[in-house]
Structures are given as C-alpha cells and as structure tokens.
Length: 239
Ligand SMILES: [Zn+2]
Picture 1: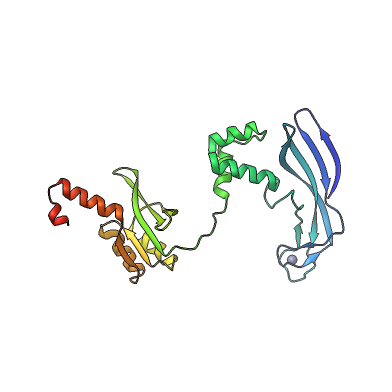
Picture 2: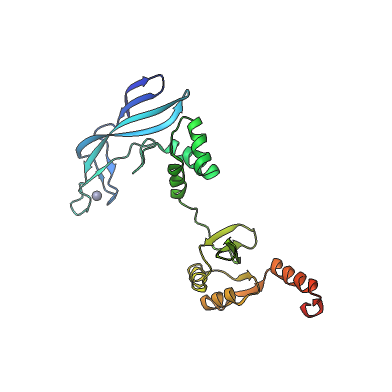
C-alpha cells in the first residue's frame, strides 16, 4: 500500500492511497492467483476518526483479469488488506466500531453515540448494520426449553427456545403453529430432552419431529399448575 497524500483539514482528514502494482492476488471465483492488471478505480471508504476528525480514504484498487480460462469470473477487483471489504464503504476497523455500538444500543441511541464519535449514520443505517452481523453458530444443546410468549397479549404470540442448562436464548420463532416447531426440531438434531408447558400443542409438534426426544414439564409450569390448583382449593387432586 502506497500512501500518496494526507490532507488534515479542519473538519476532515483525507488520505489518498494506492495498492502496489504487480502483486499477485487470488481470484475470489476460482482461487487461482493473478497479477494481470485490467484497470484501476478509486474507492472511498470511511475510517476511524483521528484527533476528533472523521477520516476519508481514497483507495486506488486494481481490477485484474483471472488467468484461469475456465473461471466464470473474467475479471475481479482486489481488496486492500485492512482498508476495504467487498460491498463495504467503511474500513474493517470502523465497521467493527459501528457493529459494536449497534449491538449495544441499536438504532436511535446508536446513531447518537456514533455522531459523538464523529461518524454520521442514520438510525435506520445503524439498525441495518445490526441486522447484517452474522450470528455465531452454536451447537444445538441436548436439553432445551420451549415456551410461548405474547407479542401482543390475546392477539399475537411467538415461541422461544432456550438452552435449559444455561438459560441462554437460542431461537425465537415468529409464531407458534405446530408446524413451525416441528420443522425447527427436525432441523436441529441432537436434542435429547425437551422441557415444556403442560399443553398438548408443543408435545405433539415435538413428537412428530422426533419421537425419541424425552419430554418433561419444566419447573416453572409445574409450580404454576400446582399453585393455581392450590388457590382453587384443589391441591389434593393436583398432587
Ligand atoms: Zn478465477
């Protein structure tokens, strides 16, 4: 990377760089390296602020021919290591800051903090960034809990699935039809025990997905049923 110019303006620092010529780059289509230049163009990326001023970097990157005759990508654009990422207008360092703020504060509050850090984004852009953060892949736990909760009481419900050992939330399904639960259980093999409420809906959904899963009543629902019966003076039957 060759730094051609640094212009520290009063409200903005502009940096102009270009990638070195003649360096071999791997084609993203086939993985074969190429150093056959096609052309250059300039990308604009925002970087972390310096001394209270936002930073804009103009990066001259190469478009290269792929030297593999059977590769579907005839040409491809190189990425400047540490400065550019595909489809990103921010450096990886600034992207990580935006993502960390978005994950902690989401839309409006995130946009306000980023403005203080000299990065102007709308609340919608912060939310958009948040939604694009790839979720970590987690192994399906052996013991899971399943329950419904109200998005709008009496009208709209969703289903939550947790790791019953740790209490960690692992999935929220947008509704509670039996088929949705059956499909989720089928797509997550390895569940040994499932804790649920006393209703038959989840029981049947899970039985259809995998009849070998042991279904148990969870502690919360057991106590809830017990106390309800006790209040109704029907404790002996409940026990
Ligand atoms: Zn290729």
